[in-house]
Each structure stands twice: as structure tokens, then as C-alpha cells.
Image (cartoon, rainbow, N blue to C red; front, side):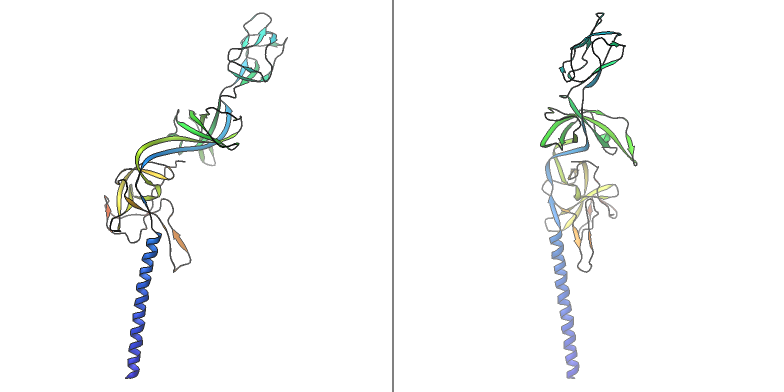
Length: 320
């Protein structure tokens, strides 16, 4: 009888101890999830979208000087390296024909005639480059090219000139692209304002502002998820629970996305988190644009019908 009593007591102790450790484990798991959950708040402010590309500096005004007449050169009035203004006389003729004049302002970078030479109509006698009127031509991906328009503002940085940013504007957008390894890019020309210390041939990185809105409601781009053709955000309620809120979106960059309806400034929202499991040596996580995967979520999706599918919002490819 005593033997059976001992066995029963041991059994009760085992069951009670197991229950205790199970409850503690569940509490610890909940605490760990709470610690891993990251939140943010709905903000209001300015949102800027840019498209970027790299290129090189060239002169925006670099022209050959050609002769409009046939004749013998009487006098060459300039030398290589001279600075000239548009309309300055460069070459005169012995027969008194109209002299050859500079088609643009700049520096004479080459000179191909001298006194006594016979020239034909159309002959290139010199070249003039304006080093004060510079631009850069960058390559823009085909996915972004339709966002780029003439006269959009841009900022330009150069590896050779540290800690300085130059302003510019889009002056030309190519209508034809070039394809390399199945990827098409288009040339975009950007003027450079006040190009002090910049030299032709330097490498550039240009950021073109394709959209710039003020006083918009926005959230981190990671917070927006996709359910079919609709978008939603996980919001944290005042009682600590979470629910899914349908939203409509506008412009976005790599960091933030505009919310045109569905959220109000100050609301707390839940961001995707990296979740690890102690029962496995591997770690699974959700990166940018991940699906819901939100444990402990209560309530239905506001504004949605049907089940929720994975997959998250994907940025439109804008560069900051």
C-alpha cells in the first residue's frame, strides 16, 4: 500500500512540475515575442522621391569651328588655349571675305590653320570648348526612366570633390535606350550649376528629384503589406492587441511611403521583425516587404474580405 502511495505522489509531482515548466515556457515565449516586436508611428511631413545614376562630366558647349567660304587665310587671330567670346573674329581671308568667327564662348582647344593656307567650305579650322558650361550624362534604368522629365531638379556629387554637392537640372532625356545583358538604360543629361573646380571627365553621381510632396502622411515602407491587389498595415490597438488596417498608398522612396487613406497621424503600427526559435539552430526572418507572419494578432482585417495571403509591398524602385 505504501509502495502505491509513493508512486502516486511521484506521479503528481511529475505532472505538476511539467505543468509549471510549460506555463513558464509559454510566458517566456510571449515575453520574447513582445521584446522582438518593433513598432513605429504614423508621421506627417515631406516625402521626396529620387532617381539616381552615375556618369561623367562633359562640356555642354563644345563646338567645331568651320569655314563658310573657300579662300586663302590671311591672318589667324587666336592661338590654342586662348579664351574667346561668341562672335569674336578668329580667321581672316586675303580676298576680304567675311572672317570666321567663334560660334560659342570658351577656350580654343585646337587650331588647324595658319596664314597662307587654302581652305574649302566646311573645313574644320578650330575647336572651342566652354569649361564654364558643364553637364553630366547619366544612365537611368528602364524601370525609372518614365519618372524623369525635363527641368526636374537634381543634385550632383563627384568622387574627386569631397563634401560638396552641386545643383543641376535635367536638360535632356533620351528617347532610345541601349541594352546590355538584357537590361536597358537611357541617357539623361543634367546641367551643373556653378561648376567651380569641376573638370571634364570627372565621374559623377546624380540624384534627380522626380517627386516632392509636403504635409503628407507616411509610414516606413516596410510597414505596408500586400493582400492581392490591396495594401494593409498592422496597427497596434490601445489595449495592446493588433489588427490589420486597409490603406491606400501614394509615392514612396526606399525608406517611407505615402498613406493617402486608412491611417491617422500618431497611430502606432507594427513593423516586420526577425523571429528566431530556440528549438532549432536555424533562424527565419522577414526582411523588407515581407508578408504578415504576425503572431498573436487579434481581430479581423478592417476593410478586407477573404483570407490574407503572404507577400508584402514592393517599392517602386526609387533611389533616395
